[in-house]
Length: 89
Image (cartoon, rainbow, N blue to C red):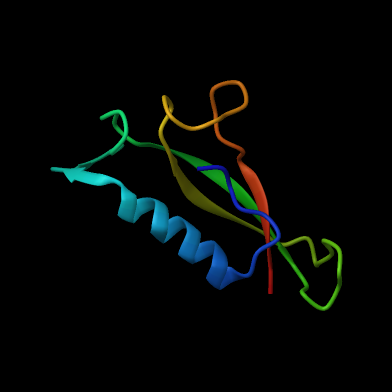
């Protein structure tokens, strides 16, 4: 999955949870239900923005989180998912 942007913390968590629920578990590995590939993960950098502003503005705080993706099925730039996004709190 590409890292979500311009969503609330709850929406971000729900999007990641929904992606994980679509995968199949095989021992310690997660498997893509579409092609059978092992799911990979990358570290994404998520900017924390102040929801009181209409644009992306905040203190500069950034959190790191793991983003799952299927290298065969998902659109990517240079073979990797989008690794930055933002949440509005």
